[in-house]
Image 1 (tube, one colour):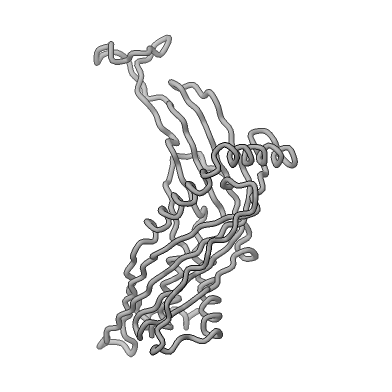
Image 2 (cartoon, one colour):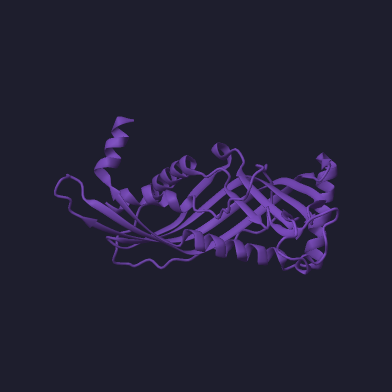
Length: 289
């Protein structure tokens, strides 16, 4: 039963993302930093108990195919929508000129909330997921009848958009954006524990799955800049490559810091999930389709 129920639940793990919804207007797609191809992370080793029968390569391939189907059906759009100060405002005394020290004035002075501060918004979208999404189980180990550990490798091309705006007391001092695309990959180590309960009113038992992501490694490759604040095509690519090369020279560990933060965010978003599956209802829905 564990073998049957696991793919239905692991689809949720593949689509766990980090998103913070900002105020409108709606944005458009874009990427992350890197000039040279980034090496994929090292494999995550698993220990295989000798006394427990392990799944065959054919079974692992079939489960990988099922997970890819579930991932395609449940991909969020956008994949990630994060905001850093987007929409931030401050209250100032208003008049002919906004005054520097609003606290000098009493409660009767006219005040107004106005845009103020650095706004930053990042949007990440799947790029032709039907063609570019790859899902593979690199390793699957059964520890006993109800417990398994697996390593999931996912890879897909993405579009990204990074927007910046600088506001001071209601005045916009700067507005710009960068758009691009790259290949992104994620390696997850997942523990799955199943528990079955006999349901008197059904032929099938109820299955509870405890899914826990214990390791996450994000990586990316082949970043291409498509647009930089007024530049497109080769000009945007040249400008983007210049910025990426400069960042890598001045701050060579910045990329690792960003990936570490992303991995921590993925771990927090995925965490531990308990999913209860009523197989008779799932199979009934499937039969109707």
